[in-house]
Image (tube, rainbow, N blue to C red; front, side):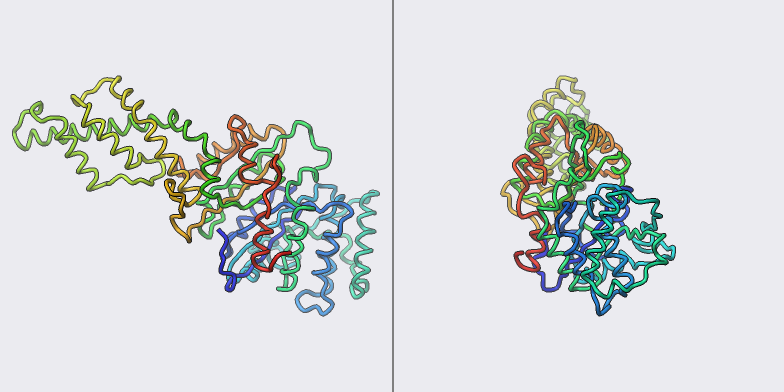
Length: 482
């Protein structure tokens, strides 16, 4: 949820470079950045189109003849890097996909700048550049590389003082910063407005930046769920890193906060699934209640000197219910737990139907069939409550300050659906807490992934991307409409 009180807030961005994406360093970088005291509020993929002026305008905001923040030498280093690496084609001969993350916080610009670190050749590991930055040796030039370099020289003509900076000693080394960010308030605002201006022409779904795409490529969606974003927490980055080992390409990204209506439509098919998948919970809870009542009946018999069969099941059940509701009352909202409405229904069924404390298998089959719909609705309501932050009955927000932000990522590659579903199971085994707090959702080809992307308005939705995108909405909120 965006913080509407912008008077005490700042925006800052971090641009994960094409080489960092190419080397699957994305998750590690995100994890490092999220240690800062900031909130990740928007994320978008970009791949500047050939022939456009996106990169030139980005460099315009870097150039500072007064050297108020950055020496001319390093300005030139960064501008050359931008022109030679963020373009298509580029000197490394890789996709120019890049990920822009926008953070919000009282001191977001300072905190992100410190997290990213400075340009330097010293080896260190206390910031992003120290850990993930590289120097790459150039090993030759092709026709495309020469074109890129010629374009770079034309851009440098814009900045008279940079032409006289001697870079001879630097030419055998290639600067790889891992992340780009603003070094001043003015540069930060200019770059954010630039990302906003080119959000759709040079950003969104960037599959075409991969070149000649394999016709067998599939695109699957992963959603990193809210519990990972609610605290100062590197976990979202760890989850991205978990998927990176599949060798797939991130081709789209978006921060989302599901509305009540979106959540109900998105998870609509789950209600019927829960009827069959979770009905075993009813039999387990029923058996637990019966066993508890049976023990209480034995205790009453021993304490009062009564014959066991003289104590009616209903009395023992009432005592079991009173004890449970007093000492460990069931909650209506409890991930992976049988909800209060279901417990109430189980007791009501037992009061009417339990004849003895050794019911046969048919009895459990009957109660399961009778209450599976009640249980499914309770679990569905909890899922809606968790994902949207809204009361499942009224649709009203339960906590105005609650944060239900998620990150949706598009992964493209061969067999992406199958690969991600397999990795999702492994991820939940490592990071999941229960049936609800299981960290991530992944598209299932049997559950209409096209509908899921449509509901979320993803950049590759068949009905078109929802506008404004998260980055556009956030930047407009802070700086006014573009």
